[in-house]
Length: 152
Length: 318
Picture (tube, rainbow over the protein chains, first blue to last red):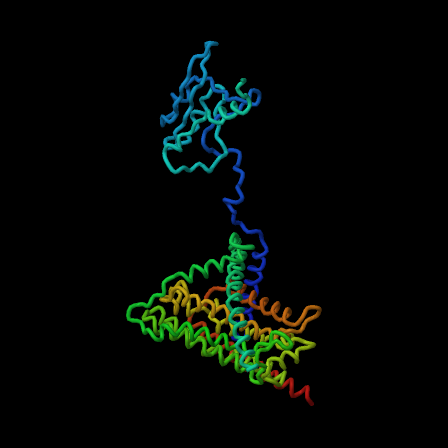
């Protein structure tokens, strides 16, 4: 008797398993097709640090106070400034070496004007160390070139 | 002369069909396995990754053909050919449509089984000639399995022969013009599919080529095109088994609206899909469980089924 019940339970369990796999076949795949479809990063993602673009002026908010340079534990920020004719400091160069940066967010917390933030970018590999030194002023310089053509 | 031309033409068509078919089946296998495991499968080469297997086949063509040390060179060379050629022979009698048969022999069903019985000789030769303990184990298992499962395969198709009163496959298909035999013989169909799975070395009966224990079994030492031929013959064998299952149980080329060959291919590919579905659902059986299952479950059940069919036929006649 157990012979026949064995056959039936075995057959039944095979059928049950097949139904489970059939259900899985019509589910949505969980695989991300990554390089073709990029995923938007979640809001608190800590990417590389970068300047905030000010909504009013369209420029950065840095006042060259050098607090971030002083607090940085890995000494990865280089800042150059010059005193303008209005006796205020103007930023000449702001570079971060990402080979040193540990994304500790101390520079962001210390900034008095909230000029720094974490970018949502996650594709920042490079082929050489010199490419890992990021010039923060580069996008602003390019913007100035396009928006304010030199008068003849 | 006309007959010779016909044979050569059909041989060329069959070989072309076999190659394209195995490429498509490998693609289908990868897609089905991917979807069951919530993956996506091949995507980028060609339309939905259809040309992915073609790219793989091209890669395989460029590989070096290795003769392992101390192998039996003649048998090692012959084994892939011997496992592939009988599969081509089985195409001789498959009734793809009403008149789409290469040679409608009156012993068609027996011929298919005879040819499929030959293919495991190639597998055993491959296992023996490789001079490798894993390959030899795989070949031995293959022989044990094929001999055991050939019996329920033949016994279950005997029911159909009794009902159609002919070994000719086109006669069997014609007998199912109104009712496909799967409705009258569900048990025989299940036994047939199970033993066909075992005959074509598919999971859950793939112990001759178990990747995880025998390192691909009989074709461990094979590389390049020879490995590819083993692969093609396995997939063609799956296709042949599902073609025979279609002709015997699913009504062959009968169906409304579409023409006969379209119905036949649709049914055959559906059976192939079921075979793949089973493969990605069930785990591999142990060697002793496998032989026990054949001799203690499948053969008694198919004998019981034959007795029932004979009784029913005799009672209906009176």
